[in-house]
Image (cartoon, rainbow, N blue to C red; front, side, top):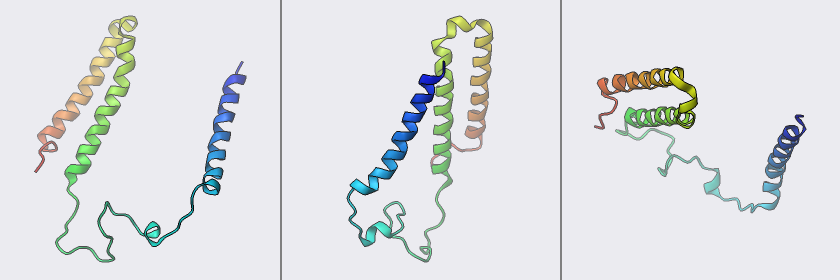
Length: 118
């Protein structure tokens, strides 16, 4: 009964291993100095910190985390939207509680100033 699933997993694993092993053998191997240097977002890396450079603004990380939160929220709400009729009142209550939890978190971030881009 589970044979097609096992065969699919075996094929996927074989393809992954085959791709990883075959890539370096068939791909170009042009080594240069730039490939072995650290990459820091297009900025030339230096052994000492830049004077006056300061820290990265936290707003970048907060924006990324909020994007991930909204993305996860949509991923979990999509199945509810597809099967809303068959879930009935309990499904509606669960989805409402789920949305309310995210709404409370959004209000918290807003009140703390996480959405203010200085």
